[in-house]
Image: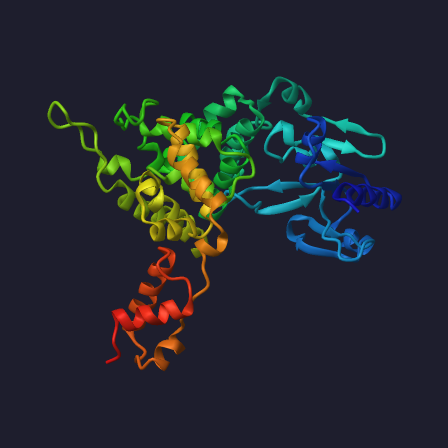
Length: 446
Protein backbone atom coordinates (compact mmCIF):
# COMPACT_ATOMS: atom_id res chain seq x y z
CA UNK A 1 0.00 0.00 0.00
CA UNK A 2 1.35 3.45 -0.89
CA UNK A 3 1.32 6.36 1.52
CA UNK A 4 -1.55 7.89 -0.45
CA UNK A 5 -3.59 4.70 -0.34
CA UNK A 6 -3.01 4.52 3.42
CA UNK A 7 -4.07 8.18 3.83
CA UNK A 8 -7.23 7.56 1.79
CA UNK A 9 -8.10 4.54 3.93
CA UNK A 10 -7.52 6.54 7.12
CA UNK A 11 -9.87 9.29 5.93
CA UNK A 12 -12.50 6.74 4.95
CA UNK A 13 -12.29 5.02 8.35
CA UNK A 14 -12.53 8.32 10.24
CA UNK A 15 -15.50 9.47 8.18
CA UNK A 16 -17.20 6.14 8.64
CA UNK A 17 -16.90 6.71 12.39
CA UNK A 18 -18.60 10.10 12.07
CA UNK A 19 -15.56 12.41 11.95
CA UNK A 20 -14.24 14.94 9.46
CA UNK A 21 -10.98 14.00 7.73
CA UNK A 22 -8.88 15.68 5.04
CA UNK A 23 -5.45 15.60 3.48
CA UNK A 24 -3.69 18.74 4.69
CA UNK A 25 -0.59 20.83 4.11
CA UNK A 26 2.29 20.15 1.75
CA UNK A 27 0.78 17.06 0.17
CA UNK A 28 -2.24 19.10 -1.00
CA UNK A 29 0.04 21.81 -2.35
CA UNK A 30 2.04 19.20 -4.27
CA UNK A 31 -1.09 17.52 -5.63
CA UNK A 32 -2.28 20.86 -7.02
CA UNK A 33 1.18 21.46 -8.54
CA UNK A 34 1.06 17.99 -10.16
CA UNK A 35 4.04 16.90 -8.05
CA UNK A 36 4.28 13.58 -6.25
CA UNK A 37 4.00 14.29 -2.51
CA UNK A 38 6.83 12.95 -0.36
CA UNK A 39 4.36 12.03 2.35
CA UNK A 40 0.73 12.58 3.36
CA UNK A 41 -0.76 14.19 6.44
CA UNK A 42 -4.37 13.88 7.58
CA UNK A 43 -6.31 16.39 9.69
CA UNK A 44 -9.44 15.40 11.62
CA UNK A 45 -11.72 16.42 14.46
CA UNK A 46 -11.24 13.03 16.13
CA UNK A 47 -9.22 13.26 19.36
CA UNK A 48 -5.86 11.44 19.67
CA UNK A 49 -7.38 8.81 21.96
CA UNK A 50 -10.15 8.13 19.46
CA UNK A 51 -7.65 7.95 16.58
CA UNK A 52 -5.69 5.29 18.44
CA UNK A 53 -8.86 3.34 19.16
CA UNK A 54 -9.70 3.32 15.44
CA UNK A 55 -6.10 2.52 14.43
CA UNK A 56 -4.49 0.22 17.02
CA UNK A 57 -1.28 0.07 15.01
CA UNK A 58 -0.25 3.63 15.73
CA UNK A 59 2.30 5.65 17.67
CA UNK A 60 1.55 8.56 19.98
CA UNK A 61 4.77 10.39 19.13
CA UNK A 62 3.09 13.79 19.17
CA UNK A 63 -0.03 13.11 21.21
CA UNK A 64 0.65 16.16 23.40
CA UNK A 65 0.12 18.29 20.29
CA UNK A 66 -2.67 16.15 18.90
CA UNK A 67 -0.51 14.13 16.48
CA UNK A 68 -0.67 10.35 16.04
CA UNK A 69 1.36 8.36 13.51
CA UNK A 70 -0.77 5.63 11.94
CA UNK A 71 1.13 2.66 10.51
CA UNK A 72 0.06 0.43 7.64
CA UNK A 73 -1.49 -2.74 9.08
CA UNK A 74 -2.52 -4.39 5.82
CA UNK A 75 0.83 -5.21 4.25
CA UNK A 76 3.49 -7.13 6.14
CA UNK A 77 6.83 -5.32 6.45
CA UNK A 78 5.35 -2.11 5.03
CA UNK A 79 7.06 1.08 6.18
CA UNK A 80 4.18 3.33 5.12
CA UNK A 81 2.90 5.69 7.77
CA UNK A 82 0.75 8.80 7.91
CA UNK A 83 0.60 11.55 10.53
CA UNK A 84 -2.95 12.15 11.71
CA UNK A 85 -3.47 15.41 13.62
CA UNK A 86 -6.51 16.57 15.54
CA UNK A 87 -7.90 19.99 14.58
CA UNK A 88 -6.44 22.39 17.09
CA UNK A 89 -5.96 26.02 18.02
CA UNK A 90 -2.57 26.74 19.57
CA UNK A 91 -2.30 29.23 22.42
CA UNK A 92 0.97 31.17 22.92
CA UNK A 93 4.52 30.22 21.87
CA UNK A 94 6.84 31.14 24.74
CA UNK A 95 9.74 29.10 23.37
CA UNK A 96 9.26 30.32 19.80
CA UNK A 97 8.41 26.85 18.53
CA UNK A 98 5.95 24.83 20.63
CA UNK A 99 2.50 26.09 21.69
CA UNK A 100 2.13 26.74 25.41
CA UNK A 101 -1.35 25.22 25.32
CA UNK A 102 -3.21 23.19 22.72
CA UNK A 103 -6.98 23.48 22.46
CA UNK A 104 -8.75 21.06 20.17
CA UNK A 105 -10.93 22.69 17.53
CA UNK A 106 -13.98 21.50 15.66
CA UNK A 107 -13.51 23.20 12.29
CA UNK A 108 -10.82 22.70 9.64
CA UNK A 109 -10.60 26.47 9.11
CA UNK A 110 -9.59 27.05 12.71
CA UNK A 111 -6.99 24.28 12.39
CA UNK A 112 -5.22 25.59 9.28
CA UNK A 113 -5.28 29.16 10.58
CA UNK A 114 -2.28 28.27 12.79
CA UNK A 115 -0.17 27.05 9.85
CA UNK A 116 2.70 28.99 8.31
CA UNK A 117 1.91 29.91 4.68
CA UNK A 118 -1.23 30.03 2.58
CA UNK A 119 0.12 27.48 0.12
CA UNK A 120 0.54 25.03 3.02
CA UNK A 121 -2.92 25.65 4.51
CA UNK A 122 -4.98 23.82 1.90
CA UNK A 123 -7.16 20.79 2.64
CA UNK A 124 -8.23 18.07 0.23
CA UNK A 125 -11.23 15.79 0.45
CA UNK A 126 -10.02 12.52 -1.15
CA UNK A 127 -13.57 11.19 -1.45
CA UNK A 128 -15.06 14.16 -3.32
CA UNK A 129 -11.68 15.28 -4.71
CA UNK A 130 -12.40 18.86 -3.67
CA UNK A 131 -10.14 21.47 -2.08
CA UNK A 132 -10.91 23.59 0.97
CA UNK A 133 -9.09 26.92 0.78
CA UNK A 134 -9.77 29.44 3.55
CA UNK A 135 -6.82 31.81 3.04
CA UNK A 136 -6.26 32.15 -0.71
CA UNK A 137 -3.65 29.44 -1.03
CA UNK A 138 -4.76 28.41 -4.52
CA UNK A 139 -4.46 31.98 -5.78
CA UNK A 140 -0.97 32.23 -4.30
CA UNK A 141 -0.02 28.96 -5.95
CA UNK A 142 -1.18 30.33 -9.30
CA UNK A 143 0.64 33.62 -8.74
CA UNK A 144 3.79 31.94 -7.41
CA UNK A 145 3.80 33.66 -4.00
CA UNK A 146 4.87 32.56 -0.52
CA UNK A 147 2.63 34.49 1.87
CA UNK A 148 2.29 34.12 5.64
CA UNK A 149 -1.19 33.43 6.96
CA UNK A 150 -2.61 36.43 8.76
CA UNK A 151 0.07 38.65 10.25
CA UNK A 152 3.55 37.53 9.21
CA UNK A 153 5.26 38.71 12.38
CA UNK A 154 2.85 36.64 14.48
CA UNK A 155 3.49 33.54 12.40
CA UNK A 156 7.27 34.00 12.67
CA UNK A 157 7.05 34.76 16.38
CA UNK A 158 5.34 31.40 16.84
CA UNK A 159 8.24 29.57 15.19
CA UNK A 160 11.32 31.45 14.03
CA UNK A 161 12.27 28.59 11.69
CA UNK A 162 9.37 29.65 9.46
CA UNK A 163 11.57 32.47 8.15
CA UNK A 164 13.99 29.90 6.74
CA UNK A 165 11.10 27.81 5.45
CA UNK A 166 9.79 30.82 3.54
CA UNK A 167 13.15 31.10 1.80
CA UNK A 168 13.28 27.39 1.06
CA UNK A 169 9.77 27.23 -0.43
CA UNK A 170 10.36 30.36 -2.52
CA UNK A 171 13.59 28.91 -3.89
CA UNK A 172 12.27 25.40 -4.40
CA UNK A 173 9.18 26.49 -6.35
CA UNK A 174 10.79 29.56 -7.96
CA UNK A 175 8.24 31.75 -6.15
CA UNK A 176 8.46 35.27 -4.78
CA UNK A 177 8.06 36.03 -1.09
CA UNK A 178 5.10 38.38 -0.60
CA UNK A 179 6.22 41.91 0.30
CA UNK A 180 4.91 42.09 3.88
CA UNK A 181 6.15 38.58 4.60
CA UNK A 182 9.56 39.51 3.16
CA UNK A 183 9.74 42.71 5.21
CA UNK A 184 8.86 40.81 8.39
CA UNK A 185 11.70 38.36 7.78
CA UNK A 186 14.16 41.21 7.33
CA UNK A 187 12.91 42.82 10.54
CA UNK A 188 13.02 39.63 12.62
CA UNK A 189 16.06 37.95 11.03
CA UNK A 190 18.14 38.15 14.20
CA UNK A 191 15.55 36.12 16.10
CA UNK A 192 16.37 33.03 14.01
CA UNK A 193 19.29 32.44 16.37
CA UNK A 194 16.72 31.32 18.96
CA UNK A 195 16.09 28.22 16.83
CA UNK A 196 18.11 25.09 17.67
CA UNK A 197 21.18 24.58 15.50
CA UNK A 198 19.91 21.15 14.49
CA UNK A 199 16.69 22.58 13.01
CA UNK A 200 18.61 25.33 11.22
CA UNK A 201 21.09 22.74 9.90
CA UNK A 202 18.32 20.54 8.53
CA UNK A 203 16.58 23.47 6.84
CA UNK A 204 19.84 24.66 5.25
CA UNK A 205 20.59 21.12 4.08
CA UNK A 206 17.20 20.96 2.38
CA UNK A 207 17.93 24.27 0.65
CA UNK A 208 21.23 22.86 -0.57
CA UNK A 209 19.87 19.56 -1.84
CA UNK A 210 16.46 20.35 -3.37
CA UNK A 211 17.87 21.64 -6.67
CA UNK A 212 17.53 25.39 -6.00
CA UNK A 213 20.55 26.09 -3.79
CA UNK A 214 21.67 29.26 -5.55
CA UNK A 215 18.30 30.98 -5.28
CA UNK A 216 17.98 29.88 -1.68
CA UNK A 217 21.29 31.49 -0.71
CA UNK A 218 20.53 34.63 -2.68
CA UNK A 219 17.28 34.91 -0.72
CA UNK A 220 19.05 34.19 2.56
CA UNK A 221 21.30 37.14 1.76
CA UNK A 222 18.45 39.43 0.67
CA UNK A 223 16.38 38.65 3.77
CA UNK A 224 19.38 39.26 6.09
CA UNK A 225 19.19 35.70 7.37
CA UNK A 226 22.56 34.68 5.92
CA UNK A 227 24.61 36.80 8.33
CA UNK A 228 22.66 35.26 11.20
CA UNK A 229 22.96 31.58 10.30
CA UNK A 230 26.18 31.46 8.24
CA UNK A 231 28.17 34.69 8.66
CA UNK A 232 31.25 32.97 7.20
CA UNK A 233 29.45 32.64 3.85
CA UNK A 234 28.27 36.23 3.95
CA UNK A 235 31.93 37.37 4.10
CA UNK A 236 32.59 35.79 0.67
CA UNK A 237 30.88 38.79 -0.94
CA UNK A 238 33.29 41.27 -2.46
CA UNK A 239 36.39 39.09 -2.06
CA UNK A 240 38.09 39.51 -5.43
CA UNK A 241 39.90 36.67 -7.19
CA UNK A 242 42.65 36.57 -9.86
CA UNK A 243 40.76 37.05 -13.16
CA UNK A 244 43.05 34.69 -15.07
CA UNK A 245 41.70 31.81 -12.95
CA UNK A 246 38.34 33.23 -11.92
CA UNK A 247 36.85 35.37 -14.70
CA UNK A 248 33.41 34.94 -13.10
CA UNK A 249 34.15 37.42 -10.29
CA UNK A 250 34.36 37.33 -6.50
CA UNK A 251 34.24 34.30 -4.22
CA UNK A 252 30.52 34.82 -3.51
CA UNK A 253 29.67 34.74 -7.24
CA UNK A 254 31.86 31.68 -7.75
CA UNK A 255 30.18 29.84 -4.88
CA UNK A 256 26.69 30.76 -6.12
CA UNK A 257 27.54 29.41 -9.57
CA UNK A 258 28.60 26.11 -8.03
CA UNK A 259 25.44 25.97 -5.94
CA UNK A 260 23.36 26.58 -9.05
CA UNK A 261 24.77 23.42 -10.63
CA UNK A 262 24.23 21.22 -7.57
CA UNK A 263 21.76 18.57 -8.66
CA UNK A 264 18.59 17.90 -6.70
CA UNK A 265 19.25 14.95 -4.44
CA UNK A 266 22.95 15.72 -4.00
CA UNK A 267 24.40 14.18 -0.86
CA UNK A 268 24.50 16.31 2.27
CA UNK A 269 28.28 16.16 2.48
CA UNK A 270 28.84 17.11 -1.16
CA UNK A 271 26.42 20.03 -0.83
CA UNK A 272 28.09 21.41 2.28
CA UNK A 273 31.51 20.74 0.76
CA UNK A 274 30.58 22.89 -2.24
CA UNK A 275 29.24 25.64 0.02
CA UNK A 276 32.34 25.68 2.22
CA UNK A 277 35.14 24.80 -0.21
CA UNK A 278 36.45 28.39 -0.41
CA UNK A 279 35.37 29.56 3.04
CA UNK A 280 39.01 30.21 3.95
CA UNK A 281 39.60 32.78 1.19
CA UNK A 282 38.41 35.97 2.95
CA UNK A 283 40.82 35.40 5.83
CA UNK A 284 43.78 34.70 3.52
CA UNK A 285 43.20 37.33 0.83
CA UNK A 286 46.40 39.13 -0.24
CA UNK A 287 46.30 41.86 -2.93
CA UNK A 288 48.71 41.86 -5.89
CA UNK A 289 52.27 42.97 -5.13
CA UNK A 290 54.32 44.52 -7.94
CA UNK A 291 53.53 44.83 -11.65
CA UNK A 292 53.53 41.06 -12.19
CA UNK A 293 51.75 40.20 -8.96
CA UNK A 294 48.32 38.68 -8.59
CA UNK A 295 45.77 38.18 -5.87
CA UNK A 296 46.78 35.31 -3.62
CA UNK A 297 45.07 33.15 -1.02
CA UNK A 298 48.03 31.39 0.57
CA UNK A 299 46.98 28.53 2.88
CA UNK A 300 43.30 29.14 2.22
CA UNK A 301 42.79 25.38 2.00
CA UNK A 302 44.25 24.78 5.45
CA UNK A 303 42.36 27.71 6.96
CA UNK A 304 39.17 26.71 5.15
CA UNK A 305 39.41 23.11 6.35
CA UNK A 306 39.60 24.25 9.96
CA UNK A 307 36.69 26.65 9.43
CA UNK A 308 34.59 23.96 7.73
CA UNK A 309 35.17 21.63 10.67
CA UNK A 310 34.19 24.37 13.13
CA UNK A 311 31.02 25.22 11.18
CA UNK A 312 29.96 21.57 10.91
CA UNK A 313 30.59 21.06 14.62
CA UNK A 314 28.57 24.16 15.40
CA UNK A 315 25.67 22.63 13.48
CA UNK A 316 26.20 19.30 15.24
CA UNK A 317 26.79 17.16 12.19
CA UNK A 318 27.87 13.58 12.80
CA UNK A 319 31.61 12.92 13.06
CA UNK A 320 31.47 11.03 9.77
CA UNK A 321 29.85 13.98 7.99
CA UNK A 322 32.32 16.44 9.52
CA UNK A 323 35.26 14.30 8.37
CA UNK A 324 33.91 14.07 4.82
CA UNK A 325 33.12 17.79 4.45
CA UNK A 326 36.56 18.64 5.84
CA UNK A 327 38.17 16.17 3.42
CA UNK A 328 36.35 17.76 0.47
CA UNK A 329 37.64 21.20 1.43
CA UNK A 330 41.14 19.93 2.23
CA UNK A 331 41.60 18.12 -1.08
CA UNK A 332 39.78 20.30 -3.59
CA UNK A 333 42.97 21.84 -5.01
CA UNK A 334 44.85 18.55 -5.38
CA UNK A 335 43.26 17.92 -8.77
CA UNK A 336 45.54 20.51 -10.37
CA UNK A 337 48.45 18.11 -9.77
CA UNK A 338 46.90 14.83 -10.95
CA UNK A 339 48.69 14.74 -14.32
CA UNK A 340 52.04 15.03 -12.52
CA UNK A 341 51.36 12.65 -9.64
CA UNK A 342 53.34 9.46 -9.22
CA UNK A 343 51.24 6.39 -9.98
CA UNK A 344 51.18 5.44 -6.30
CA UNK A 345 50.09 8.94 -5.23
CA UNK A 346 47.31 9.04 -7.82
CA UNK A 347 46.01 5.63 -6.77
CA UNK A 348 45.91 6.69 -3.13
CA UNK A 349 44.16 9.90 -4.14
CA UNK A 350 41.34 8.25 -6.11
CA UNK A 351 40.66 5.66 -3.45
CA UNK A 352 39.76 8.25 -0.84
CA UNK A 353 36.43 7.61 0.84
CA UNK A 354 33.53 8.73 -1.38
CA UNK A 355 35.91 9.93 -4.07
CA UNK A 356 32.98 10.52 -6.43
CA UNK A 357 32.09 13.54 -4.28
CA UNK A 358 35.61 14.94 -4.60
CA UNK A 359 35.44 14.50 -8.36
CA UNK A 360 32.04 16.19 -8.63
CA UNK A 361 33.12 19.12 -6.47
CA UNK A 362 36.14 19.57 -8.74
CA UNK A 363 33.95 19.49 -11.85
CA UNK A 364 31.63 22.16 -10.44
CA UNK A 365 34.65 24.21 -9.33
CA UNK A 366 36.06 24.20 -12.86
CA UNK A 367 32.76 24.94 -14.59
CA UNK A 368 32.24 27.90 -12.26
CA UNK A 369 35.65 29.44 -13.02
CA UNK A 370 38.15 28.76 -15.81
CA UNK A 371 36.06 25.90 -17.32
CA UNK A 372 39.17 23.77 -17.92
CA UNK A 373 38.18 20.14 -17.34
CA UNK A 374 41.52 18.59 -18.29
CA UNK A 375 42.24 17.25 -14.80
CA UNK A 376 38.66 16.03 -14.40
CA UNK A 377 38.80 14.10 -17.69
CA UNK A 378 42.26 12.75 -16.84
CA UNK A 379 40.97 11.24 -13.59
CA UNK A 380 37.84 9.88 -15.23
CA UNK A 381 39.96 8.20 -17.91
CA UNK A 382 42.30 6.79 -15.27
CA UNK A 383 39.39 5.30 -13.30
CA UNK A 384 37.79 3.89 -16.44
CA UNK A 385 40.97 2.22 -17.72
CA UNK A 386 42.69 1.10 -14.52
CA UNK A 387 41.55 -2.25 -13.12
CA UNK A 388 40.17 -1.90 -9.57
CA UNK A 389 42.72 -4.44 -8.30
CA UNK A 390 45.50 -2.08 -9.38
CA UNK A 391 43.96 0.85 -7.53
CA UNK A 392 43.24 -1.26 -4.42
CA UNK A 393 45.63 -4.21 -4.69
CA UNK A 394 45.47 -6.99 -2.08
CA UNK A 395 48.02 -6.71 0.72
CA UNK A 396 51.12 -8.78 -0.06
CA UNK A 397 52.48 -9.07 3.50
CA UNK A 398 50.97 -8.73 6.96
CA UNK A 399 52.33 -8.00 10.41
CA UNK A 400 52.46 -11.74 11.05
CA UNK A 401 54.73 -12.12 8.04
CA UNK A 402 57.07 -9.44 9.38
CA UNK A 403 57.21 -11.15 12.76
CA UNK A 404 58.07 -14.40 11.03
CA UNK A 405 60.98 -12.55 9.40
CA UNK A 406 62.24 -11.50 12.82
CA UNK A 407 60.84 -7.98 13.09
CA UNK A 408 59.43 -6.83 16.43
CA UNK A 409 55.98 -5.20 16.41
CA UNK A 410 56.19 -1.42 16.70
CA UNK A 411 56.36 1.82 14.68
CA UNK A 412 58.71 0.18 12.19
CA UNK A 413 55.93 -2.14 11.06
CA UNK A 414 54.06 0.80 9.54
CA UNK A 415 57.20 2.03 7.77
CA UNK A 416 57.86 -1.40 6.23
CA UNK A 417 54.25 -2.03 5.20
CA UNK A 418 54.03 1.47 3.68
CA UNK A 419 57.18 0.83 1.66
CA UNK A 420 55.70 -2.43 0.37
CA UNK A 421 52.46 -0.68 -0.61
CA UNK A 422 54.37 2.14 -2.34
CA UNK A 423 56.32 -0.35 -4.43
CA UNK A 424 53.15 -2.28 -5.20
CA UNK A 425 51.20 0.82 -6.29
CA UNK A 426 54.15 1.96 -8.38
CA UNK A 427 54.22 -1.38 -10.21
CA UNK A 428 57.66 -2.38 -8.91
CA UNK A 429 56.38 -5.52 -7.21
CA UNK A 430 53.28 -7.63 -7.75
CA UNK A 431 53.74 -10.78 -5.69
CA UNK A 432 54.42 -12.02 -2.20
CA UNK A 433 57.91 -13.16 -3.23
CA UNK A 434 58.61 -9.69 -4.59
CA UNK A 435 57.49 -8.14 -1.31
CA UNK A 436 59.70 -10.49 0.71
CA UNK A 437 62.67 -9.70 -1.49
CA UNK A 438 62.01 -5.95 -1.09
CA UNK A 439 61.92 -6.23 2.71
CA UNK A 440 65.19 -8.15 2.73
CA UNK A 441 66.76 -5.52 0.48
CA UNK A 442 65.55 -2.42 2.32
CA UNK A 443 65.26 -3.50 5.93
CA UNK A 444 67.01 -5.77 8.38
CA UNK A 445 65.63 -7.24 11.61
CA UNK A 446 66.98 -5.68 14.82
